[in-house]
Length: 127
Image (spheres, rainbow, N blue to C red):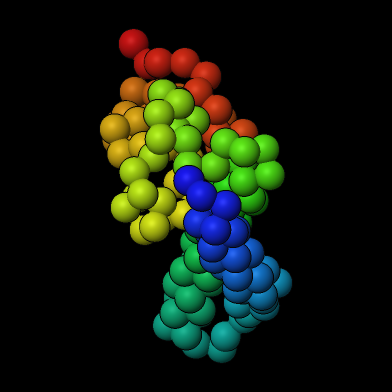
């Protein structure tokens, strides 16, 4: 991958990081509110659950972006963290924070490869 391409992905990742930083700060949506009507309370609980799921998803994505920025700094960006083959340019363009090639990502998704989500390193293969 060229220096120009790496800089492009770094800019994309940093922009996404800034976008997520704003959404992660807005935690008012998960506040527990009391409503006089039981139906309103059920609706508020549903909205709170959705806000919690969104916050969790954004938090996980933020971790993936930070790890991708770390890989850029270390010089391993665009290389699969499991098989150490280059991740296809098409995949990196679609998902710049991808840590795995398609083949290895499918194995992760099927839980054939176990991953420490904090470090995203291969730690074993399920039997």
